[in-house]
Image (cartoon, rainbow, N blue to C red; front, side, top):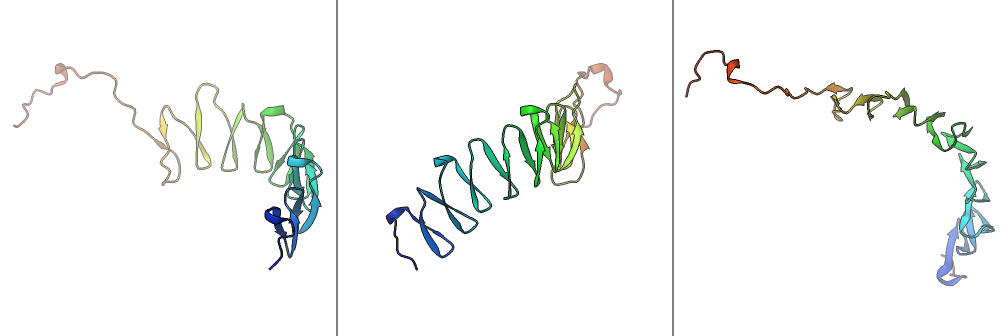
Length: 156
């Protein structure tokens, strides 16, 4: 039990208390919010979250130049189009990541993920409870005429 030294602004950091409006608790270390509302923790230090981010709670990187991909800092070689697929950086305009598996996008069709596979929504369907991609039967668009009758009368 601790006394509210800072009134309603009191928060706990391990067994110590601090004013959460002026400080943060980073890895059980009380540190001052030197960047105001942009003060974020990276390990036991405070970083300026407006420009920097933290990868794997220990590596500080500039957000506009790098991305963190599963604990690895990667340079944004595709600029703002850079995305992560596991530890790999890719251009999301050219590829699609499905559960950690990278696929090339088909320029003629819109593709979606089904598990770790890729499929075309216009002629395939993803059955989420079943593994894999299953082809959906396409509706027959040719109207049936009376000439298609096989000559036998139906029983009533």
